[in-house]
Amino acid sequence: MDMEPDFITLTVGKQKTIALIAHDGKKPELIEWCKKHAKILKNHKLVGTGTTARMITDRTGLTVKGYNSGPLGGDQQIGARIVEGKIDMIVFFSDPLTAQPHDPDVKALMRIAQVYDIPMAISRAGADFMITSSYMNKEYDHDIINFKKNIENRAETL
Picture 1 (cartoon, rainbow, N blue to C red):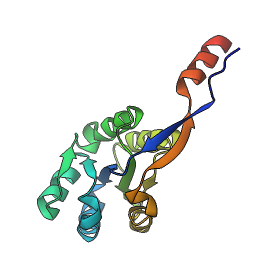
Picture 2 (picture 1 turned 45 degrees about the vertical axis):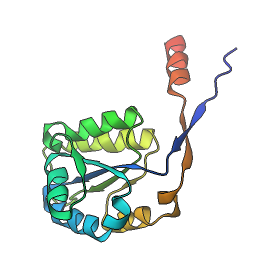
Picture 3 (picture 1 turned 120 degrees about the vertical axis):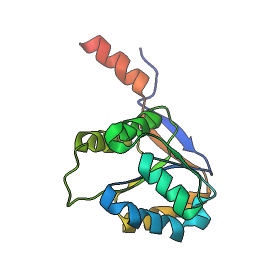
Picture 4 (picture 1 turned 90 degrees about the horizontal axis):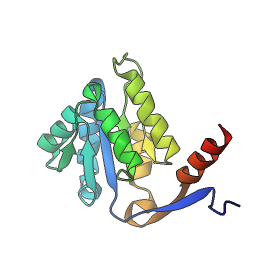
């Protein structure tokens, strides 16, 4: 009889790792948002996709570790960090009115964030609510699917 729980609890620490991402048309808006919330953001670890990370660092003084540009795999790199438990939240200013050549990568990133129960803001208002939440300066426990048990069960039933 399998006694493993269906879910496991993960704890997000007081210092969060926040992924900052923006489509080209939304980069200036994200930079302004980062300036507005710099006092909060400087207390957390910041990562981002290529150009966005560089522009935020250059224009706000915040240190943002850069991955590849989104169309060159940056969204997938952030997704991989989520799977590894190394991303706690995402602020993604996406452009809903412009077609994106890497749209499947964006959808995959959003999907993996949902699978791992990662808070994700996709607009300025959502990001404002998230960054000013009382959870920003304390630990937060959340339950995710016990993937080990899920894989074992699937292997037995296939």
